[in-house]
Amino acid sequence: MFTFRRLALAALVLLSLPALAGEFTRDFSTDADELVLKNLVGHVTVLPARGDDYQITVHVRGDDADEDLINIELDDGRKAELLVAFPVEEHRRYVYPELGRGETTIWQPDGDNDGGWLSKLWRGMGGDKVTIRGRGRGLEVWADIEIRVPEGRETAVYLGAGFLDADGVEGKLVLDTHSGPVKVDGHQGKLVCDTGSGSVKVSDIDGDLLCDTGSGSVSITNQRGGNLKADTGSGSVVIKGADTPDLYVDTGSGSVRCSGIKTDQARIDTGSGGVELELDRMGTGRFVIDTGSGGVELVIPDDASATISVDTGSGGIRNRLDDAEVLHKSRGEMKLRVGSGKARVIVDTGSGGVTITSR
Image (cartoon, rainbow, N blue to C red; front, side):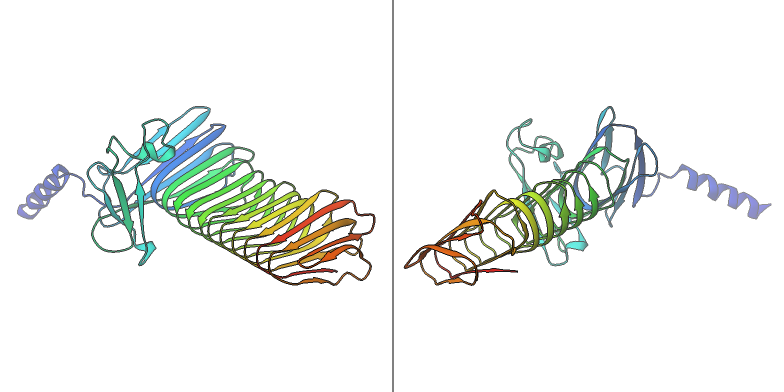
């Protein structure tokens, strides 16, 4: 009897204690036409759903994870918004071990309504900043999220720092992170990948594609069915296989290598970096290659019809087209015609040689 009473008393004491802080999981579901998700730090994975509803699972993790610390809000409707709100008013430093030795700083956007998506992660901080690092001082907490997307829906994910992945999704998809890599495989529909600092890697894409990095490389494999644009402030661009009406590549600093390209028109612009463009199909539009510093290698199809103008500030010009008609040639300049000359090709280098050949 004494033992039973002691056990009963212990059970009552345990029941009266508050729940222990720690990692927790929250599940959400919505039949919205469009979903916007906003998260400060963590790993977000986007996958196809089996049914007609969005299914979202949020795992809040870390040594300092606490249900009273992280507020998860779903604003439901035709355009639903899920916000994972961190306590940035009280805590400006966060630890996310997945960053290793890395560190990133996110400044609060100016203005309450016009500062972009990050403005909602702040609650009147007054122009301060948040620092996220892999180790050291700070609150160790983050949110890993899995989103399952019904076919044909519009989805946008905004992340402060961490990792963005998508696999097998069909529908318009925006993946935007202040700092961290973006990886997508097997997507159908318009795709936007935007990172302030981090690499972008996409493969097997059917639809319009925009890849934008402030600092970081871009790798694209097998894109088709829509326009393709890659823009990097600093970082190389590699494209292996694309069937697109319009190809546009712009790098402030970084090389560009494009192979297996089928396109009606193209523009490739680098401030500093070499360019390799290998065309399997060449339409009758304009093809412009412009480098401030870097050599150019252009490979055109055997059946190409183009007028090609080359201008180099410093660097030789090598014409390896056996059947090309030379219309003009002088120091640093050359003009060629291949076939009936329908497409217009302009190659301009500030410093760097140019080689033109056919396959």
